[in-house]
Image 1 (cartoon, rainbow, N blue to C red):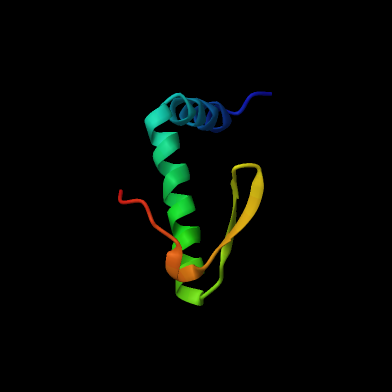
Image 2: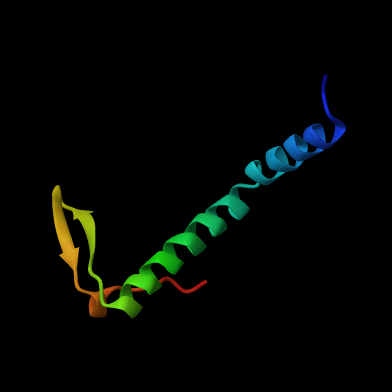
Length: 66
């Protein structure tokens, strides 16, 4: 049996995922939050650069403006 609330939720999820800008903005906001947390706690991050893993010191972490 299909629940009306379940169908509405699925429609809302589909609508959100079909908005590429909204999805991109949400992902970027999550990334920025994680990077900020690393800067604030003094933890480095690692990135993939030119085929190698590179560690970035917390004071060198750059946040994107939203």
